[in-house]
Length: 141
Image 1 (tube, rainbow, N blue to C red):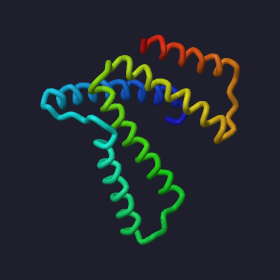
Image 2 (cartoon, rainbow, N blue to C red):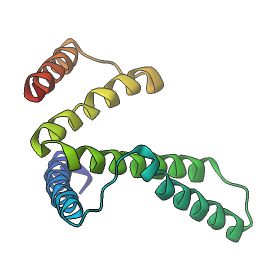
Image 3 (cartoon, one colour):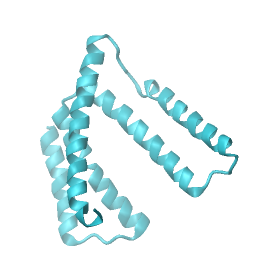
Image 4 (cartoon, helix red, strand yellow):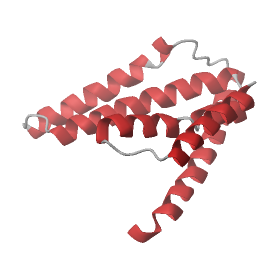
């Protein structure tokens, strides 16, 4: 299965696309029901719940948090905040434009990987980053 990383990555892309379409449907239904999320402060309770749950898990285990647990907590918090922000955007904007902008996360990963992990960026990858940014801007306009 490890040899098929490209197939796994492409399957994840398709599933993320489906998830974003479903999230848009949820946002539309929530809007129909007069359930609106108007600000980041509406997303913060979810983050508090996640933090409390993680803290309870650590206390329950009676162990100091390991580096892995702290990294996992950061990932959960970033993911929860991202989904909340996507929900806010989808309530008010176009799903296709928002999803195109979300594709820029690959640019963020490439830049962070360069600085954090010392991963090299080839000239082809730098060109791809530029084209991705140009495409996202063109798509959003």
